[in-house]
Image (cartoon, rainbow, N blue to C red; front, side, top):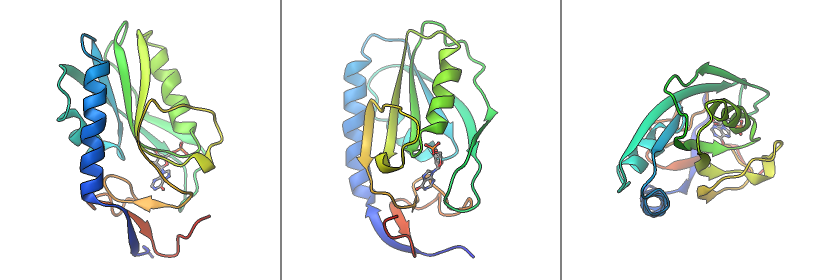
Length: 177
Ligand code: IMP
């Protein structure tokens, strides 16, 4: 059974404001760069689509798809479903993620992107759950730090549901873990 959404953690207008702030900062930092954004499917799609439209610098973009193995809300491993094909040699790569939880997905991705020998690799994530970290990864541009609770919406799912919500919500029965 799919649990219902209990409350709004981050509203649509809070997301919009923060995405614009991030876009301004990224535009400033990547002025005069060969910027390639890498969108991590499926979760980052909404954040990515909103973020790229706030950028004032010319940018290329690519997609990768990864899946973590989890039955409900717990992840236990990561698999690359679609990797990168575009040559990223000497590019300035910005990985765009929905959420950094254990850090396993990001670690795999950093290694994959690194194998193309880009000039730089940075990470932009909408959400961060630092209490859940198992692998030490750092985030260069962060939307919001959130507590240890399972969230859905704005691209994030529970068993593929709720990605379409325009806000970040907390599922019913998901108190702080
Ligand atoms: P990781 O544990 O840092 O590797 O995160 C793996 C992936 O799990 C993320 O990219 C999300 O797709 C998913 N994930 C982690 N926490 C949540 C959550 O609270 N809601 C929905 N998906 C999540």
